[in-house]
Length: 251
Image (cartoon, rainbow, N blue to C red; front, side, top):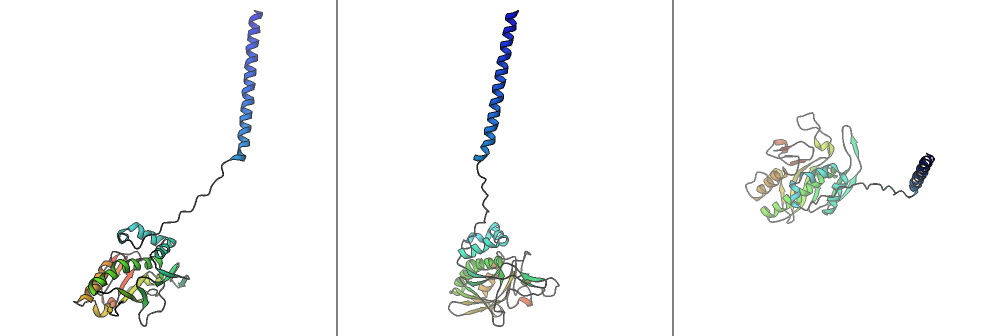
């Protein structure tokens, strides 16, 4: 009987010893874990993602809605696209005129063809970057090739009646997209050989001048949100209205 008690006592002692050892081990592990905070991996801040620039020199971008939307929604990405395409421009300070005005606008200084004011039009041509980018797409992939195709000469200048003007749509109370620098009125094209192709004088011509004007108006519909010309009404007899306001019309 005494032998049995001795065995039980010995086993109890062993259990106590093992338990104590485990407790001590757990304590040391916890202590080591606590101390480990001094060697924690540093938290790295995530880099801000900047949208890649759209390649305006690529013909396929004309049908790339995602690329066009990127330029509309991101001024930095849009400006990067213009620079990569060789367009030079200056940024224009924000302006507010009643309910009209613009932010993050720019003025194109040079492109494949220069955008210039028609006589009597405002000297400055502020426009949103989205409008500038689409004008460049139109100029590069539509206007210049069409001029060479029908007229045998590239375009040197594109003459505009204006871009920004605080006014309503003719015959309506709604503000025009010109009120937000989102529209351009194209009056004429000056070719490298000096000839001028006028919307007012040449749009209905049966010769190559008329064919050129009708083609660039028709294909503008694939690039701009709204394209209006002499076929629409008398108010547009002397120009092509091109805008990026979000509505959709081709007339």
